[in-house]
Image 1 (cartoon, rainbow, N blue to C red):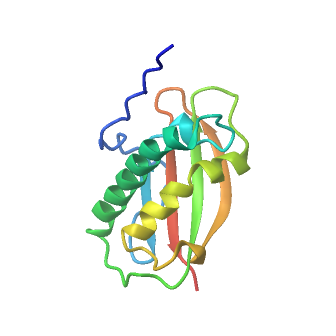
Image 2 (image 1 turned 90 degrees about the horizontal axis):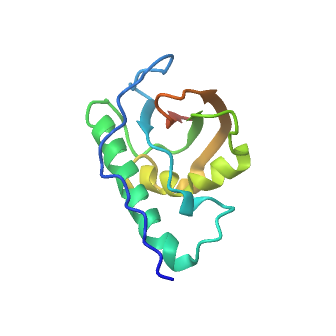
Length: 148
């Protein structure tokens, strides 16, 4: 049986829904993007080879999105330390576990680091995951803040 690979979404930002988000400014970068592909889930049974392309594509998309936002932000990058808040909007009531979401977004951290936000992603601390229900537009919102 031949399995077809699922096509990744092109780099098209999610419609900017900025309800209650802090505006990107000095010390804050907030982005809105699609959920990561299912292959990147920590509970995925996909082989390592099947995860390579989705990881690369999602990481590069996050990197481009962060660079777009940072282009309009007065910043002194790379920051010495940062925190990351995750707002996970899902279509149904069965949301993933928060530790799985953090594992799912490892490549998003790498993409933000590659964009020049930090020198090393070990200096980024995740403050946690907040879940919301929005059946019209499932998405993930990442809020990076400069830490002192």
